[in-house]
Image (cartoon, rainbow, N blue to C red):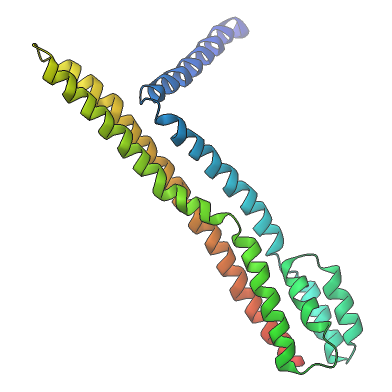
Length: 220
């Protein structure tokens, strides 16, 4: 009895979900051809965010166990073992320490200079392609406004040629063109938020890195 009741409910739910997806797709397509680049920009922004997020999360990881081992080896005047631990860490932090510890015999100031140069390179690698998110955040809303304005111009042009003006026709055409602005703004907000979230991840790494490097420089 229970399954006999449940099956129609599941089928009805599936149909409702399918209809909702179809309605959203139809609504978006009513925005006109300008919706195509806006949708493509939304896909690109999601891809860029996921790709950069995974890369930054992996590169910006600082293993405290490695830091502790390196500090202990440096305190014991065993720079070779400290360098070995740094090379075993494949994160950006490990590469930065390796660039400094590998300069055996150099002054502390020169060692800091090597680490600073490597830090700039690693941060630049983290920021790679994130600028596109900033561009999308600005371009997507403008594309939406262009689609809306072009639609409004067309509507009023048709009104100037028509003998009979219908409020329903004007409102219907206008709401369809406003879809462009709404979608463009949503895509812009998503891209803007993703860009600044990635920048926050990089900033947190920079602060933690500076703290750890200062500890190592003190030992040196």
